[in-house]
Image 1 (tube, one colour):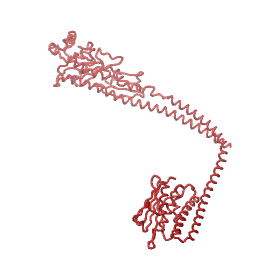
Image 2 (cartoon, one colour):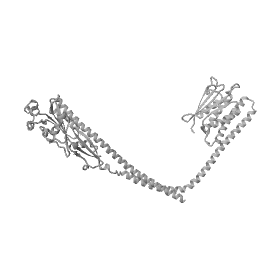
Image 3 (tube, rainbow, N blue to C red):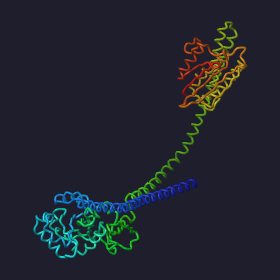
Length: 542
């Protein structure tokens, strides 16, 4: 008793330990799942930062090149056409503030400002014409690019007539695009362009004439860097703090989100992107909440729930053990009684089958005695056949009470017993049995035994003549698919009549066979193949 009590205490302690470990594992797994999701989200965001910024910068370059090609190949551009051309880009590009077209003028062209083309551009605004002339005459030794077209249109007053080349922060970019004929970058906005609280940048592209010899003008596009970054990375900024700096300006910080940028942050990652002739460094680090331990609410909930369930389980087990101990003795006693009852029932069932077999043998003996007093051959044959059928049934009941399983008959053993009996009656016939171990349920065992007895007896009596060399009867059993069994009876005797049909046969034996086949839902087929062949197929579920 004391040992059982110790085992129970050990069991309760083990269950508590397992519950504690499982709850702790669930707590750790859920938090780790969140940490992994946070890491994956951050890594995905970092990858997308580079892809999205590269794509948007390519769009900026492509837009500027498209507008440059337009001015290069179009001689007369009107204000309405320019507005119509640039309007889609104002809607599609993130952070774009304005598009500017500034035609090129040298000092020698100052005297030709009254030519028809120039006058037609400025004729509607005398003040603008005067401001353009003043800008051109301020530095006669330089190339001048007074702004003519402005998009959006409401920005005209701020930019028309201004010359980017007159501003020191733009002269380098103008010189570079004229020399390289590629897009140049200015880390500033043309005065008059508002960039909110962040830095701005401008891209410039020199446009040359169709012979690619003389500059036609400058195409400019100005961007608010903060708006550009916020819209481009609107799905990534919730996960990352972003900093953008210009490596060509001593890594000058242009844009930053979140807390003050920590240059010594070990978690920071960086990439470099080409922006025209400059290089941006994009520095990224996860938001603090994606670096901290998740402390997921459901993790704590499952931890508490797991511990509570463990304690509840221990309480239930204690009550169950107490109740089980009470029932153990009753169950043992009841088990002994049931086992004894089952043994009695099995013995009784075997005894019944044994007595049925004995009674059938008595009936067979009485018929044998009656057969000896008869002189009519037909009556003698009829009694002989009936006696064989009774013995076939008796043999089935004998197999039932002899086998351990009183619910089925071993078909292979039954055929061996049947052949042993037939050899006593027909010693000249050689019987060959080929069968696996198959159990037949009792509902089909007796009808099947009668069918087999009829076919074996019929073959032994009528298949062979006195001149038949080595009479032989093969009995083969095949287990088929879908719980079906096929039994084949084949002899090497004289065979069936040419017009034989079992369905129209007048013999009592074949009528019995047909009735029994119908009873067990079996099909029977016959054939002549160097003797008579009968095949029976039926479904067997044991």
